[in-house]
Image (cartoon, rainbow, N blue to C red; front, side, top):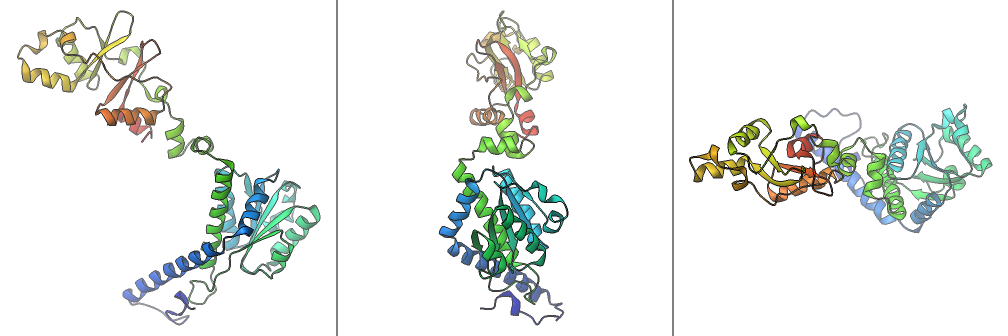
Length: 337
């Protein structure tokens, strides 16, 4: 059944904007239909590929030419980032010295729409002689590549979204989706966790959320810690509130946290009394403040602040001695949310 390919005759210029929009929608529909068809073809053969990769002692060597090569690079990157070591090998470069990266315990994932790429033929011959297991991702189950492979993943499409049925469009989308499916299935089989992902992505957003700790963000410099004794007056506390970002920590002689005064506490005090500056801190402070440990995940600190509607948390050790203060804005800037 024809989809996007017959909307206009090949070579016909289209200036009508409404028609261009419809063409674009037709391309997306064609690719969506191809993906739906692909999902229906994922069966026991797919599981064979998952087992072959999961049980291999080496890496996944991904290879392809042209657009297949571009898709192959993305698949290799996705596999590696989700706990399945993989690398891309250009088949031509491989035959000119790069085959040394291939080991007998590796698995080769070879991508070709036709399965008859001349550039892949030499690599397939080398892999066959070396006893390296091959998985073919191809649109032709009767191709030379498919016959050489141990497992064949059917990535065929009825037609490309290109009006001339030439430029790889639908076929590359389908191949990329099959690669993603492989990566996710392997991830699940291995029990790859969020923590594992963070370990491999320390610079990414998720990595920061799962590795950033309160100690990495807190203010620990004594000169910048807003502390006061409970018997002092609010006159000094007001100054600290203004200078130290709206939260003052009340400590005892042993530097243990026994209370907190916030800008909100000061506002409520001013609504009740006129002699604000003469009031002792002990009459204003919250005697049961929320605190947090230095090793706590920064994301957990954000959750606690949002849950209780507070902007800062004293950071304390096991004995409740003050170690620092962490502010919500600092956590946000550090990428904890």
